[in-house]
Image 1 (tube, helix red, strand yellow):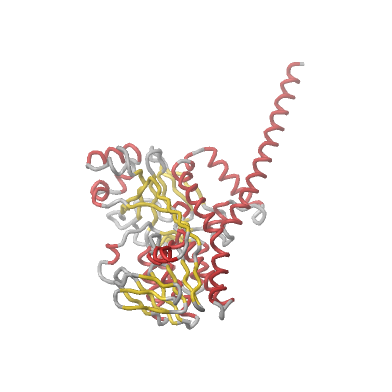
Image 2 (cartoon, helix red, strand yellow):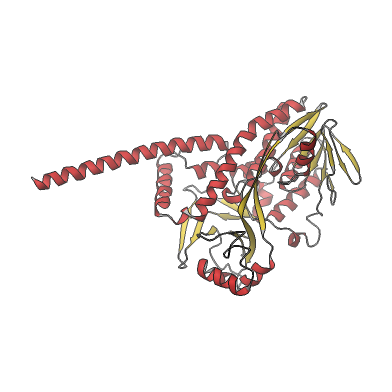
Length: 439
């Protein structure tokens, strides 16, 4: 089989590795320069990534997990920074393997591209897609036409492949932008080379006016992502002078001024970026004996607040690989099976990611939320198979997202019923004691 992949980002490079391992002829087209070229790391901009179980399994499937390990930092929980400088640690789970692994997007991308090339994949850099013909199928660029049995659109949330298909076929597209955007800041290692704060954790600064999330890096630094509204005096539109920036961070996130000595300069120098959720249908279109299929953000971009964008895209790759192997002589059937297996669950992930924005911004400070988290972890520890928190199901298992949400809702009903029953018993006991005293 021959395949053309549009996009040499994480999903495009990984699916190229999967296909090449099975002997398929793979060509990858990418509009950007080679990520291994000088200055590529500095040109890129992305939220640091937290590799979780779904991504781990996908990388293990192509034998790359061990090669990636030196480039990652384990995160065993969240460190929540209070406005008074107090730090609270919230573990992700009780088991040693219930951790996330922080990795720079650039480092992971370079690893995947190198492995794909080693397996014989051909990359064309600085080569944007101009047109897509699903009936052949084929992709046209400025240098010519690339025909193949299978065309894969892995070219991101603003996919050209998806847009071109939508002009020729009836496709539903829902695109939703968050009213908040983000900037990245670097928390450097100290002058002695040691981290300025706990490294093996995800750091969170919740607040009413903003949110900061920081991932650790192997060199002792952390990449902090500042989420703020686009509009308003406390948004990107209003924070345009050194005085306003310093005053805002001193009021809302005071310890960041010590952690980032040049915070004001970095904030003013860096351009804000937007956050988008994308849902589309269908993901695939048959053409001849083959077809075109969308993958990763091109099919289902989500907000980053559950840390599942990359992980769900990697899971796409492993599921598509499985469907192609199950239907080796029938590409249209394989692509239809892939969409049936994935689209309902990534729709659920989109809603979960929106909901987790509120959790990170507001609820991590709530005593009620913390009590519920402790109850979840305690029940999981006592009944590890029967009771699994939603976060654990999403991040530390490969249970499909929709099934994970349904199970968590059943557990919520059980916990709510048990809480109501215990409250009723306590009230009855209090009433009984009052009557006894009054006799």
